[in-house]
Amino acid sequence: MHPLYQILADAAGRDKVTPGEFIIAKVDLAEINDLYLQVIMSFKEMGGDKIWDSQKVTFVMDHYAPPPTIKAAENQTKMREFAKEQGIKYFFDINRGVCHQVMPEEGLVWPDMVLVATDSHTTTHGAFGAFSTGIGATDMAAVLLTGEIWFRVPEIIKIKIQGKIRKGVMAKDIILYIISQLGTDIALYKAVEYTGETVTDMSLDERLVLCNMAVEMGAKATYIKPDKKVWDYISLVNPQKIQECRPIKQINEKENEVYESVYNFDISNLEPQVALPYRVDNVVPVSQVAEEPINQALIGTCTGGRINDIKIAAQILKGRKIFSSVRLLIIPVSNKILEKCIELGYIQTLLNAGATLVTPSCGPCLGAHEGVLSSGESCISTSSRNFPGRMGSSEAKIFLSSPATAAASAIKGVITDPREFL
Amino acid sequence: MFKPIIEGKIFKVGDDIDTDQIYPGRYLYLTSPEEMAVHAMEDVIADFYKKIEGEDWIIAAGKNFGCGSSREHAPRALLYAGVKAIVAESFGRIFYRNALNVGLPAVKCSGIVKEVQQGSLIQINLKEGLIVLGTPEKTLSIEKFSPQLLAILKNEGLIPYMKKYGKYSHLKNI
Image (cartoon, rainbow over all chains, first blue to last red; front, top):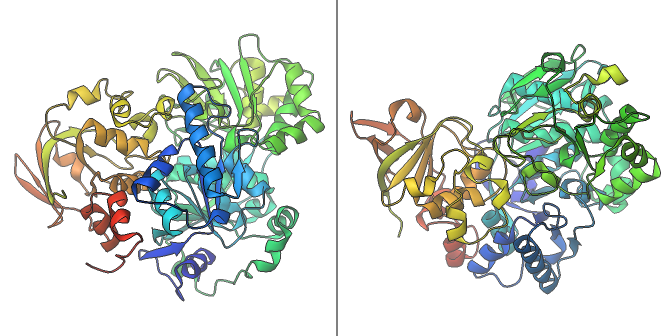
């Protein structure tokens, strides 16, 4: 049985589960962000009084950090009050960062858990071997009430990635290329497992990018078999879990008995990729879109704001200046990452180059604040979505790329192959 | 009250209509139905809520309707604007759950898009699992709901369901 099915079977109190069947699963951790006052409203409308377990719930104030409007501020105030009144153990305010980084940093994510969060990019945590998925406000209210959720057991797609990554190419380029080949609905209602030597060789930061973006193929959850890199990380952030986690069993069945389909990718010759407006699967090699002018470059968010991402941006921008008419936003994904970037000198390098530092948060990724676009503007971004209106005006264009490509583009004012600077 | 038969006029949209288009991110801090309704689909169809006023409309969409963010604001805004149901080739999975949870029927029907025109009549029969189209008259089948989902739908959403039962209790047929 696949480890994801083992997790779901355990959570449902069954010996086994099969794809397509419906189960009621117990939740190990429920995370709610500050877009979702509706969770509390739905919980109360359901007749909820005390939440099922105050030790298994976390609130992260990340989408409006800090709040841009009175209403957003009021929503956060109500969430703080609710968290206090319920004795919620893990409350992370606007000074902590984006939930998909804060949760792992705080030791709240581990292999073999069931994690639900009010954010579609919750697929990220499959990189740690968790079953993790995004849900809406009312689904979450029912979790707060019961500690349970219904799931349709997903079929699993295996994506095997082989080949050595070329210089200047990052996980973001690989996942954009994969999505362009497989489409935005290939994994609808399904889970995605990533395997192959390229994935094994990747840092955890880079694996998180693959899992984060899987939702752009429609995926419900992801999985990368935990290896030493994962266990080393868990032993740093939550050593006790090392003892508690069950050993991961080998899959005994044949490949075609476990996976609905298997896709193979060789990325040995892959060059940096860019997703053109307004679809994540509208992807071309950077050479085909070079010279496209940009007004803003964004390096940050839960997809592209980790150490690895800011490091490469600093490498590229060291001793250089951004183009006179370009705004470069740097949004480290968490305060811990920001502190580390300061310590390593990356932030100073980027500020010297002319960057604007934004507080760790979701920033303008979803068009809420801190760098939204005016009509007719173009932005190259390390975030995950380029839908119309995603980052402000629906007349603005968003190009998705790796942090390296975004940094190189900021220097020249047009979309640029980062290998020119590496 | 739960209506097993929903009738209305078709509002036709394409593939991959994401939740940013259904409900733009710049309004996510809003929570009141009146305020949310006016922004439904505003980046795709200006004044959508006015255009569907006074009549029963059912959205017919291509594949992957509601892909993207987990925002429950998206189905809520459609519901508050007066949309009666959505029929699509497929749905973004979070949107699908959210729609049923807020009491907005979302039904999967393969081949729906090529069979309907803007403004044509449609009848969804949730009890029989069928869609009947106006002119020319045609019957299509819809994907069956699981017992748990059907129970949520029959109770007009997860809030009334949980208010009544206090837990999930319909894994098996009712």
